[in-house]
Image 1 (cartoon, rainbow, N blue to C red):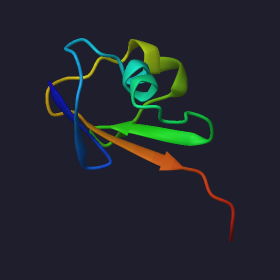
Image 2 (image 1 turned 90 degrees about the horizontal axis):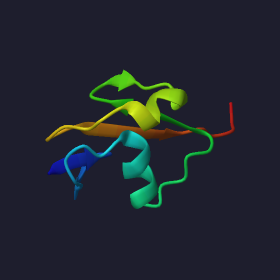
Image 3 (image 1 turned 45 degrees about the vertical axis):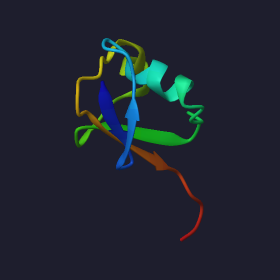
Image 4 (image 1 turned 60 degrees about the horizontal axis):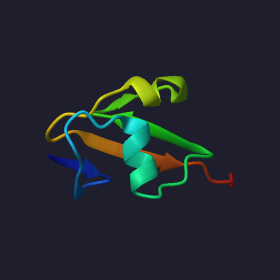
Length: 66
């Protein structure tokens, strides 16, 4: 199935969880927040959050500055 990571289409198997998708795409998971279809998903829920066709995942990296 097709999902979108930061507006870039990528494929994954049906039933893939958010955590598995991040691992399969070598996306660092430290110091990031993840939104699924515009809803922030708490880190403990990543492993139990299944993706669906067309899911839109936004990865937000923390940055220093002021």
